[in-house]
Image (tube, rainbow, N blue to C red):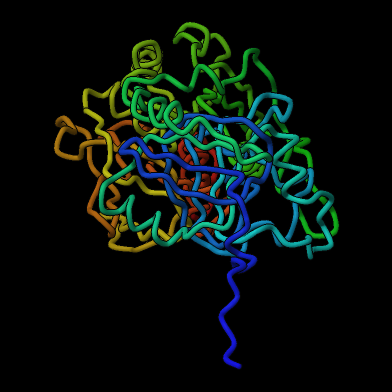
Length: 403
């Protein structure tokens, strides 16, 4: 007697989606929920780094974004209390969602103290797993950064029409000042130095310089590397005025990374930066700080098609001809063609030729679009912190350090 094929669906067909990623164009991507429940609207981007997912998910520059990880094994080393980049871990997470390819495995690392899923819940971050992250990445590359809603409901019940309407109706990051949401509310000091194997983090006891850092969403490792260069730091909110900054009589000023549209943050911060420029104090900017400096100098910024998010971005130093591999995280860029006379473009991206650095002729002022502190990423650009402190050494008549 002939046998008939079974009519019962295969096990994988019975699994009901418990998470959705709904793009502004109506595309619906189904998966399994991880992290906290609920929904959040944001801009979805992709990150190509193969390490450092905890650092990425605690980077304040990702405020207002959903991060898609192109590396397939996210969560396999767990999480810990040492590798976060947010200065105030009690503050709400800036990142609004995480997208990963496969479900999270059990941690396999001696430093792990918590499973990524529990960590996401504790941080209030919604996640979706078991989706084709390659296809999503290709879609973003083709169509550009997209507004989206990420939703997680354990019972699998969603109001799809409402989610589509929310994604389509969100205003996005253009015109959004997100630095005000992630900046410190109060001034604080910093002396912690980088992590050392079997020793942990150190502490600066004999500083050579006093640096005021403007916090647009600053990362811990930036502060640590500055402290490692002998800088005692006073960190001020993004709204600090030029008068407030200069009242500390700093040897140098640092402009930090951060999220959102630089033109929106510039509405209140450009005047402060212009006051610092007028005072002729050594000045160093990173990422949003680079963009803020460019605006203060009279240049323009623009929204990018897909942004730069990863730890493998080649950048050429046009002043030396050298190429360094960098860590990047930005969806806006300085328009290199808009740099005024007296401002030199120093670095360019070898992926798309966008501006990645500048310096001011005759002034101790420079900035870069990428993240020389890495965390995660390569350490090719650590020399920039020495370059900054050398500007202060020169002012003090001290011997310069090799970069």
